[in-house]
Image (cartoon, rainbow, N blue to C red; front, side, top):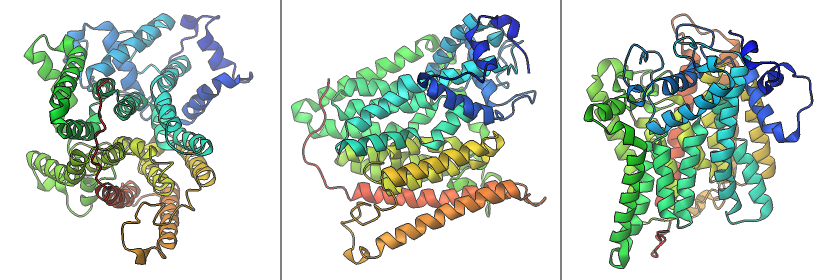
Length: 517
């Protein structure tokens, strides 16, 4: 670990924060303390282990590249930009954000982003800076979006406050962004602003916000079809009243938004093609590590990666993804309501996670955040899903040294949702929004739901305990991560069926909801 004491200087606030740990922190810095407590327990997967050093180094390296190299070299392999060493593989808006952070880093300590010589930089001052950038992004983009959504929902004030607290305490996003270290809060927050724009009639602003989300992380494609189907469905309903004009206007806004983000990379076809190839690297395979989706689970009994060619894997995964998300997309196009839009966000992201090509375990966050929007309506199922989504990333948390934060945040979330939202009590057919179905099930639903939930929690606790206390057999080194993946995949399939049932049974709305502002 490299020291940066001299470069920081005696008067630097970064030095004081890292060295004077015993002094009292003000309430205004409570959020910062939470982030730093997580970082204290995190080993930053791969940190201190050359030649790659880990995911944290990827974020730092992108700042190094975007600050020191001309923009046309960011995505190309050169002597100053070895793409095999954490080459930039996210869209341009991520690169711009990295460059912005780099300018701030340069003003504090130029060594943090020095070309070549800063590789593997892991000083306490730099970690503090990087953690703070995530916290700032949280409070600028993600937290205001959640706050705005919850406060403008229907219902009593106490339910709104409780839902807000539960949403902000979701352990999955906290552990990934502040422990593992990423900026998912930006892309997810922008997608939420897109939803808020559409639901409040600010369609052009909402479309622009989602374009920015998509240009920050390509995984926002998980949410692209619901946005498209909702806008298309509303425009088709009002073709005689200006729907076609609105559709053209929205299309122009989307094209202009993309053009602004991609402008520096549109100078040549080769430049644009290189960026696209970096964003969709098919050579990485069907899935990475042990992820709770169909293909990883199926590989336990059928080695899909070995039996099928990569081209066949791509076509199989594409067909399975499209088939499973088709019902919810058709329903949303025919019946474009805001509630249906939220259901479609959950269903499409789950379909992509379970069946698409090249899935990461962290991609479950793209389904989890839309589920957060149902905490006040479906507290029992939302709480259950959010706990399982966090558990599905347990092997990653173990690698990052986040066992204690995982236990604490998961138990805190479970406690808060059961106490403030009475999640464990709202298990009737009406609470689960299954009242259109057979009334003969009404009597048994609460008991069955509670029993299944308890069984699930016991299963997660047991697998977590065995993963940290037992050693896998030599012939099955990945036994426990695979069991976690299988357990999570079964749950996600059930949740996919449940949310599809709710969406497909939604009554048809015959009005018109879209107005361009």
